[in-house]
Amino acid sequence: MADRTESGQSGQPRQRGGGKPVSRLRVMRTERLTPHMIRVVSGGEGLATFVPNGFTDSYVKVLFPVPGVTYPEPFDLRVIKAELPRELWPKQRTYTVRGYDPVAGELVIDFVYHGEAGLAGPWAASLEPGDEVLVAGPGGGYAPSPQADWHLLVGDEAALPAIAASLEAMPADARVLALLLVENGLEEQPLATKSAAEISWLHRDAGDDLVAAVRALDFPPGTMQGFVHGEAGLVRELRGHLLSERGVPKEALSISGYWRRGRTDEAWRAEKAEFMA
Image 1 (tube, rainbow, N blue to C red):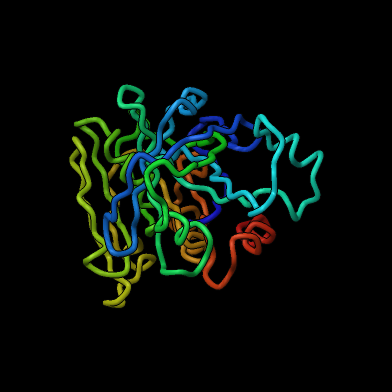
Image 2 (cartoon, one colour):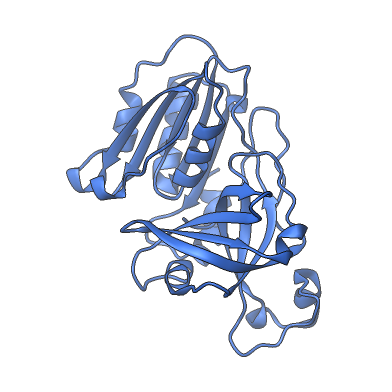
């Protein structure tokens, strides 16, 4: 998962994650869900500052302080940005809230891990119970609408946590088509839902094509609500297909390029508005 283009839908106002209080959490446990997906469960007294927003694509900014820098207390990004030069600001990565349990006092975030490349993946793989996790947010903009006749959920590993949370939130009478692109069969996860969901896993190592799979779908009758997120190139193709060829109203779609192949997170943030226009 990588930084996310923020695009709300279905008349729901998107809540931005930036500018919100920073929650100082502590790692409770970690779990390797698949060879390339790491779950980090955090909590502690700092979770009291986290206020959920009801979106199934709810996300937080995970903050990575620059080693050796002493930041003013309390930890406030606005103060940091006002008082310190940009090169000392904490780096940020955007991640979906996979789960929030106020009774257990747990915030769950799943991280895609591609070895020692990148920032967040290696960090998540190195975490131990008691380590600090800084998050700002949440933001968000999508949740399954009970008014939709059916739902389309499409994405890759970066979108999998939000899609999994959306499946869990679907009412029992919802009709859902979900297409999920992962590297291979080892990256598939059990997905819980009360709905009548048809879940299709596609594998890169087998040459599966997510865009072609969506094009081949027979859309059910009625009003559709769609969630299409993941690698920016795929998302842009699918947006054109859904809007222009299928005639899906723009307000019925939540579409976001979370990352772009061949770009760092910083480079993608700098160009994403133009690329996705």
